[in-house]
Length: 174
Image 1 (cartoon, rainbow, N blue to C red):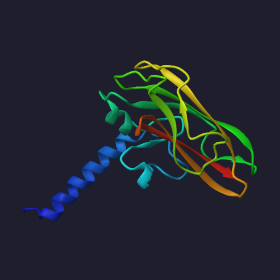
Image 2: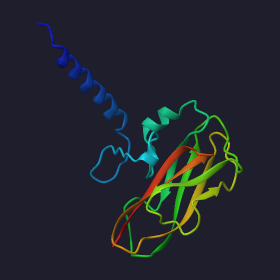
Image 3: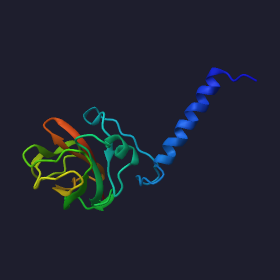
């Protein structure tokens, strides 16, 4: 019996989804979510990473590229509860998975969008150069908003206007 074209396309789609699901099986995601895709015009085109594990997808996309990173750890963990106007440090430890080093004069930690919780500027020079496979801990002084709710701040590493690695922190204000 010959299968219809829509049926064979559906079988192909289901197979592709199964492959993606297996690739993401070790990814830790936000509570009640297995995979999260966020769209925002300021964030278009690059995967966002947060939490202790970096997605297998982003690691695969970055293989062999000059500028790429892998998130190793984050503090505070996403969904941490703070009182209004609580001062805290957001810290991300990232590994340079690209083929080029990150220079202190050319690579910046940059605010990309979302809630502006930082207490100082929006762009910071790296504190040290990072060779391929090296790692660095990035820190931003933050202050939780005054109103209760959920807030996400998006940050990234950039060379000029080109952001090559993005990550975020989500806080709950109670």
